[in-house]
Amino acid sequence: MIQKVLVANRGEIAVRIMRSCREMGIKTVAVFSEADRSSMHVRYADEAYFIGAAPSTESYLNIDKIIGVAKQSGADAIHPGYGFLSEKASFSERCAAEGIIFIGPSAYAISTMGDKITARKTMIAAGVPVVPGTTDKVTSEKEALAAIKEIGLPVMIKASAGGGGKGMRLVKRDKDIVGSLRAARSEAASSFGDDSVYIEKYIDSPHHIEFQILADKHGNTVHLFERECSVQRRHQKVVEETPSPIMTPEKRIEMGNAAVAAAKAVNYSGAGTIEFIVDDNLNYYFLEMNTRLQVEHPITERVVGVDLVKEQINIANNLELTFKQEDLRQHGHAIECRVYAEDAENNFMPNPGLIRHLTEPYGFGVRCDGYVYEGYTIPIYYDSMIAKLIVWGENRDEAIERMKRALFEYKITGVKTSIRFLSRIMDAPDFRSGRYTTHFIENNLPFLLAEGDFDGKGAQLYEDVAVMVAFFDYQSRLTAKTLRWAPLKSSIWKHIGRRKANTEM
Ligand code: ADP
Image 1 (cartoon, helix red, strand yellow):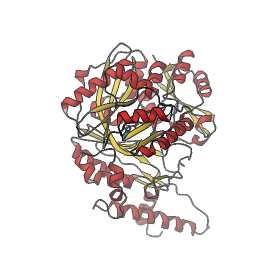
Image 2 (cartoon, rainbow, N blue to C red):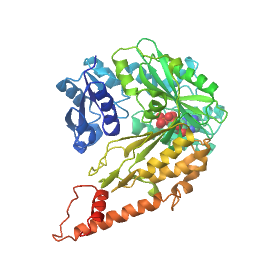
Image 3 (cartoon, rainbow, N blue to C red):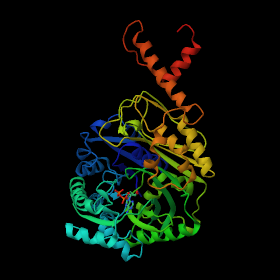
Image 4 (cartoon, rainbow, N blue to C red):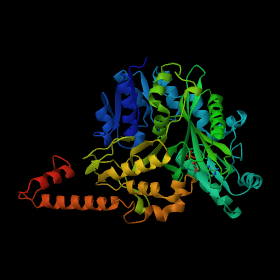
């Protein structure tokens, strides 16, 4: 049985994994880069080891260093989290070769699903519907023109090694085919070191719906229902919810079965996600499989009542799943908002920096998976997501109101965040209707970025006051007797409360 887990990641996901380990009595080992010396995951772990300079190629992607730490610390397993090494087949293989348990699927499953062209072929063979398009890679302009003639415009040109919304080009007009093909291939080559691309039909106004899978090493595979992930910006998810507001009970069974078949086709073990693109008539097509834990996994945990990280560890320990498909139910509704340190009004520019003040939301039905704290400086080197806010409600309406309440309570000063933008999403009529597509954000941008008292309850006003208070507080401390900056021992809010109570100040 696994006794000690090295978490080869940082940020909120590293902390989230360590939390489950702690509950299971498993010791944890953190690795950290130069930029992460004071990061939360380093403080949370039982042991922490420095692995290199800030750029991830020198630290979080450095397989030799990470394996070295695993050996030095006596970790018997490695959890890769998401991103970084989580979908590198060579890392899974290396762990196996070194006698370290990789908490994830086999190298074979990762590499088959990691190459989108191979994945498409495997799905076709397994009888899972894929988006109509080419089954082989397209190298010449002639091939591309012939394929597009058959598929019909509009089409997507996609990198076989793609991910994170990169290496994708939408083509609507004949005259753009050649330029887009070249652009997609060169972006694929520079981002992934592989210029293979394929072409698929562009599904108009689609929904992105994915199914969570768990499979043990004894042939048991179940799905934990769907997540609706159509609130996207530049093909990246921003808000996710479950159940999907457009799903029907019959489709859920049909798509769930297809997802299980997809996982079985690669002998999958562990937690994974089958992503589908779905049109308005609920026709669904396999997009890709993510062979790891997803960012948005907590909404499934909340609605189904399963700790996915514990299940991953149990599966890695060769244990059988303790439930069957018919034991699983969806209870209530969960929504996740990804909170970024970014400036929504300024083209969503990342805005890393010092967190001066932080109040996270609590209360019934609220989970906040974060890693930043007051006085922490968000490094510039990594993803600017600082937390995931997850709420649960008895039904969708209650979940939306609870999310709005939690976003209202969430106060961060020092860096700009997407909190206000997320609250606007909760208010948008298209989101409320539940019938939104992947174009929701682009179609609603003026509403989502509008100024003013956005929820009628004074949240915007409150935020403005917070900024003003912070500014005057800063000024007053600068002009104190010594004329030196006097750091506060407690938060600004506490300080102001104390001042009010203490009239001689
Ligand atoms: P990545 O691996 O880069 O995340 P995906 O294949 O998962 O790429 O697609 C990401 C998103 O791009 C989807 O959620 C969807 O919004 C959009 N997309 C991808 N393929 C299509 C398609 N054929 N038609 C319409 N939209 C698509």
